[in-house]
Image 1 (tube, rainbow over the protein chains, first blue to last red):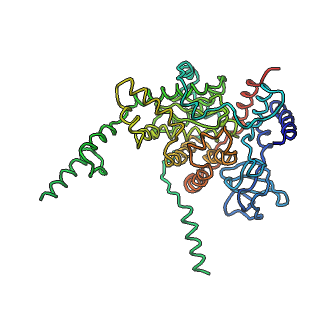
Image 2: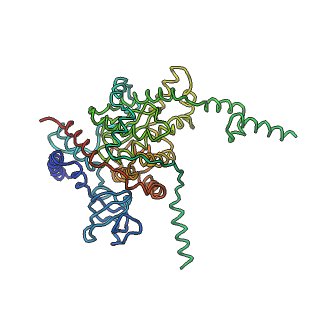
Image 3: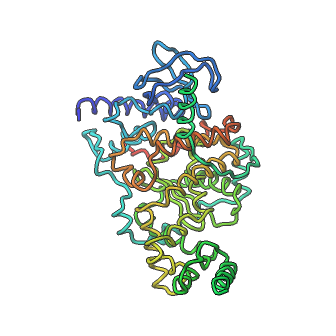
Length: 198
Length: 278
């Protein structure tokens, strides 16, 4: 672990945190996100499968994430410019695979904020954090007072509906549907077809 | 003649019991099966859920932020209203822990950790996770798992027993379920149902996929995600399947609300309130 690097990051995070709290968390979260291509993928001019192909972006290319629209991400890719790739083709974060971070977006800021509360060194420990492990669950003693305290936060159907309407949410009638995952089979079939054609 | 008679009796038994696949079961096994399939009443389901929720709250307390908790309850309740069980006593809460996880308890208790909340970017992502957990509740996945296999010995029959000792056993088994995980098939199903419920509630159903994308980006060796990764199929596999489902079934709802601004405003308020003074 590069301690100096972490300290520099911490300072940067603190500045970002202050800026974020003063300005807007939205801007902050989205500006802070970079990504890496999981696979070689098509960069398209619009978020549609049949949109104009700009170029092929190789696996492991670093990208800047601009925004998400449904299952697509608008990204900035160095020489390739801006375009859209499928959401599942991008990994969030800028570290190489072996050094993937667990603190992304607001989580990173929160970490720097709360580390400041308990530590003056500004070091980020990635192990031994406070959390719920299997052992914690086994040893947990019931907390009926905490359970009762949750009643104060519940809300009525009309309050929830009002909040939804304020957020521009329009309910839709959609049936549940079964789904059989057969992506792999499809790929095989395609390959076979190609072979026959060839 | 004799085989025919046996066949007739077997068929009659099947009809009487109402399930066809136990035709070859012995009388003794049939007896225990009958006990095991005695349905858990909704009243009992809620009582079990409350007990498990109390246990879980013993491991991690609710975050001390009324505004944040009410926000999560408003969204959760709105999604629950889109299900066939809007009447359940729905309770939603953010737990004060850095672990990245979410929990569903029978009867309508749903908890999300702050560690997971902080990885989200907009309200459609929060809605997606809540809807995934709500789907587990609606489909009674926890109770189903407690009846199956080795769990049946521990909690299956105790589920409907009236003894206090049995009830305590059920709560222990139910809490331990969070360390063991549900059936993988049920996790995929909750992804599909959850995305559907989010779309019903007016959200972009790809929000859940965006959360899975983030989870697939997290370092799996980190303590914060250890329990969740152990108890769920890999986020990559869930992401591939859910992408397939969404493109096939819900693609036209991709333009629905994500409410990034409202989510950011709430998170900003939360972080301000929780910021260390001085």
